[in-house]
Length: 332
Image 1 (cartoon, rainbow, N blue to C red):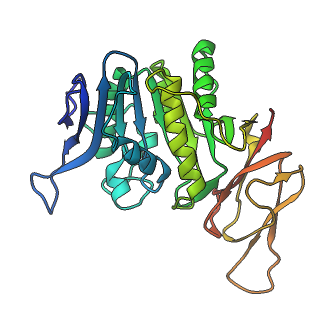
Image 2: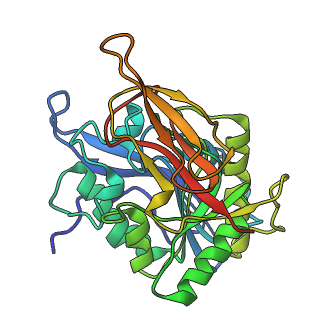
Image 3: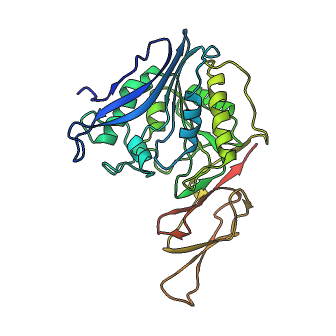
């Protein structure tokens, strides 16, 4: 297979703290011999496990980049035993323009795995993670939020896996993250996801959704910062005790596709419930108003199941096929 064109300015095996770049050559109209420069930090102190920490898998999600940029600023790593690889914005082209997908090739990085070394920019980044970075790590944390189009209650997440020993390890790491909510996540489309690639490679993988709306809040940033420390403590890399969520952590379950309420109309959403509310099956969730003319009866949407509303569509204008809400069960 062709060698990946990304080069790293750092030595992954060197002791101490290093700051540098993943350099991906990118010839374009404004720079014939240009490159995409993805910031990276490596911290290594002695021998121990490796954790790969990333944010900005989607370029309009900010809790991860903020938490990881803060963590990367520390100058003393005596409380670290092992290695931490930090990439605050893995889809850096998308992050620079606040887009979910890359402005260069229009590809969603989180649907591009395992990637291709001879593909487009996004596929090359995915391939570098698959063949270079993931093999270095035992623990992998990828911090997400809802971006510009969704908002979530703040949760850490893992998945149901065929390997139940691996699943149990992922669940333990998810619990250690100590978000206000903990979720065994059901994905509508897991193909090509970073999660799927890491899990196939046997990694202890945790993801999150920590808010959204294309912005951040003090609470969600606090959850991300605390979660990064807790994840590393759980891995045995960072000294200290797990710090629990101040309000405790509720475990959520998504049993099937009825958790998703999908819009079948274009229009203007009038919400009849709020994020974080508990609903009963059949309860009115929203009205979608047709905006082309007045006096039109809006379409009504009802809860497909009992549970907690853990996600909502953020722009008030919605399109057919958009996810309007997600409902999960609080199980413990």
